[in-house]
Image 1 (tube, rainbow, N blue to C red):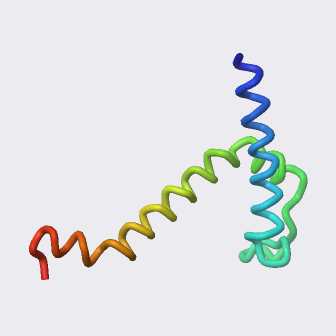
Image 2 (image 1 turned 180 degrees about the vertical axis):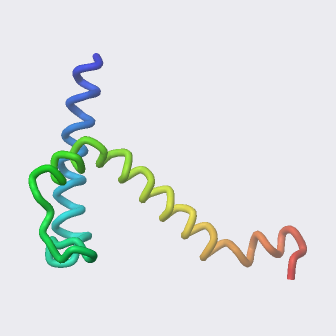
Image 3 (image 1 turned 90 degrees about the vertical axis):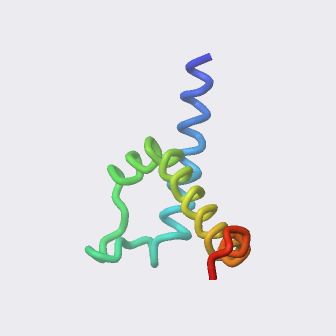
Length: 80
């Protein structure tokens, strides 16, 4: 069972690394060094990618709640 979990984790990490490098980074380069992501970075992104993806989804959810329901929540508590 733990091998299946590990395999799924690495597969999700692989797809996260592909998405992060090809869609998230500008021209596949880091903004501060202007260098492309290397092999070591891709391996690290594959290993920690699912955790990074979860954190990014949590930030997106918090942004959505704060941006779109903030006025409603304030009205519920009587804050003007």
